[in-house]
Image (cartoon, rainbow, N blue to C red; front, top):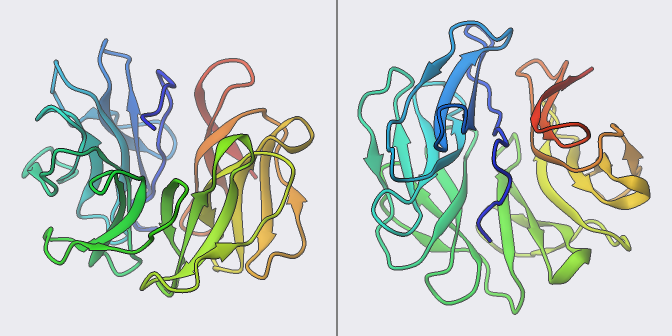
Length: 255
C-alpha cells in the first residue's frame, strides 16, 4: 500500500489569507515534508528524519497544523507538526502501518487508513489522537479517505485490483457504497471547494483527473496528464493542484 512514487507531492492549502501548500520531496535525498507559498516562494523544510520517510502532508483547514505519515518509529504512523517546524507529535502507535490521513473541515478530526486488523480499513480519530474508531469493515482494501467540505461524508478509494472505484459513506461510517462503476482504475478522491463534485484520478481513456457529481452523474474529464495523484484545490476553488507523471513528477496547476 505504501506509495512508490519518489518525488510525488501532496498538496494542501491553508486559509485564503495565507495561501500555502504542503508537499513531500526527495530533493535533499530523503522523503521529507516541506511548505511553500502558492507561487513557489518561502520554501521551508519541516522534517529532518534522515533515516525515515515523511510523506503525504495535509494542512488543517484553519492552517495551524499539518498531518503526515512517517516511519520514524519503524512502521508508518500518523504525525502532526506545526508549520513553523515545532511540536511534532506521533498520533498513532500500533504494530500496523497507518497512512493517508486528512482533516475534517472543522480541523477537529483526522481520518486515516490502518492495517491494524489485518485489512486496509478507514479509521477516524480526534485531532488529539483520542477516540480512534474503525469506520469500514470490508473484504477489500479501503484507502485515501477524504472528508467532504461540509463534514457529512467521506470519499474513499475502495475495491480490489486494477478497477478500484470511488466510494462514499456517511462520516460515521454507514452506507459505504460506490459512486463510480467504470472499467478502469479510480483513486485519490477529493472534493470541489463548494462540495458539489468529487475529483479523482482515473486510468479511463488514457488517464487523467475526472469529476463526478456526488450522486454519481455528470462524469467529466478535467485533465489529460496521465497518472494524477494527491489531488486538491485552492481555497477559492479557482485551481486544482495535483502530482502528475506525464513528463516527470512535479506540481501542476490547472485552471
